[in-house]
Image (cartoon, rainbow, N blue to C red; front, side, top):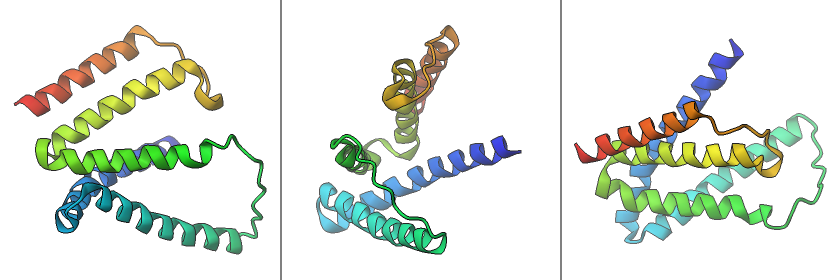
Length: 149
C-alpha cells in the first residue's frame, strides 16, 4: 500500500510540473521576461517552503544540525531549478504542454539512468540494462510522436 501512495505522490508532482509551466509562461508574458517569471516563481516557493520548514521544526521540536556539505550543494539545486523553470517558461508557448512534458520525462529518465549508474552523491548503483535502454528509446519515440504529430 505504501508503494501505491509514493507512486501516486510522484504522479501528483509530475502533474504540478505540467501546471506550473503554463502558469510561469503567463507570468512571463505579464512581466515581459522569462527570467523574471522564474525569479518570482522561486521567490514565492522559497517563502512558502521557509514558512513550512519553520513551522515543522517548531512543532516537532527539531533542531537543525548543520553538517557542512560540499559548498556547491548549497547552490546547485537552486541553479538547476532556476534553469529548469526558465527553460520550461520559454518552451511551453512554443511546443505545448504535452510535448514539453514528454521531453521533460525523457530527459529525467536519461539523467536518472546515468545518475543510478554512477551512484551519484551516494545513491545506490544500478546497472544499465537492455530493458532500461529500451524504456528510454520507447519514451523518446513517444516524445517525438507527441511533438511531431
